[in-house]
Length: 564
Image (cartoon, rainbow, N blue to C red; front, side):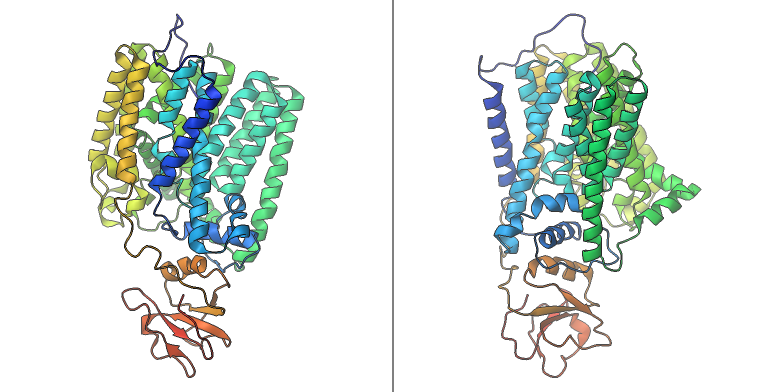
């Protein structure tokens, strides 16, 4: 959504394409290609792999559709905006595997929708139609749009939502359109209903609109319509989330707001929040092969340049503040879980990664070559500085704390290390890729060469991400449902019972204190720890699970059924 000063003489891009063909058909074909690619990448996904997050969203969707809920008291609250989009799936099927496959389709469609939005953004930055088509296509292959599109996570839709929001912000600042204001306000408030990061988005947007109104840069009607729509959608989102919280978190969710307040009011908390934010910026730059660093540098330059188009300055400043706000607030509210991702993390800024990648691409294909080199040097400096600060603050905790590979897909791709974080190797490879992209921007026909270079890297990442074979066992882990109640001993670890809430689709799990109580009367199945001892009178042990799985099950009296 950003650019640098327009070159003195108009320049034609050199990407060939079928003359006279409607961009609508090409956009539709590209959109379909992106959907098919994602469905192929996630063809083996039949159930949640990122728990408890995915299960939290799935159970919220199931409850919204009228199905059984769960008791997630004390867990992180998973907001309802994304789950609301998934709820209709449960109107047609209750089978856990079928539901999840439908979620993959929905996420793939929404993520692929970033392609036409990226095209519109590049056209607003005055790129030619052909250049915008191909640049947007390869940008939509970015890791942030591939990684989460096949998972039941809010991150599957947030990048597309925020791209649409930035487009609407630009149009509001450029034309003062009430329609653009309504779209921008609605999307900002919807983002808040989807995830806590959306609170930052909405807060920034309210400040932007207020500033535009005070400066008389937009008509009062457009500004008030925008704020009114944002308030209405935010109120509806609060009603939705309050209902979910009461139903699925009867004892209350995890108190992240209290943690945030304590971090903001103490020196140590501020150090944690700031260093974590810096670590997220390092990941943002490295995970976009350095392009986000170029985009950040260009955005700062554009924001302070008085001669630049006003709407672009507003959009650049909006994206900058939103990015920094998300990085800081999400780090401040992040519990210390003794994992490497507490210090270097990419998921929270994945929602803006594509926008920054597009910004970097615009610089490469539009700026003068000397400016390209300057911005690339700044990007390299940002990568080194942010990485250095994050590594210095974390110290040996980057080696001692738990490394979860799911948190570091782009970094693992860069470094080739799959079981630990190697920031030096990842930074070096990211800088090498950035150098290749810069060289591609310095040769004749640079749009074509930049497209080819970026496509090669993104395709290589997609190949690395793709599963090499179907997982062993296929669908065996999805059981045939019994017609009875299922109880879970409170001593069973969360990584057993949380996924079970999705698999057991016909009833709500009943948790009980197995150390002091027998399973509830009338229950057909009790899931207990392997150390629970012999079953009580009338119950029989199924022999399922085992010590290595952390659970076993008992069958209740009069219940003829298979285990869950």
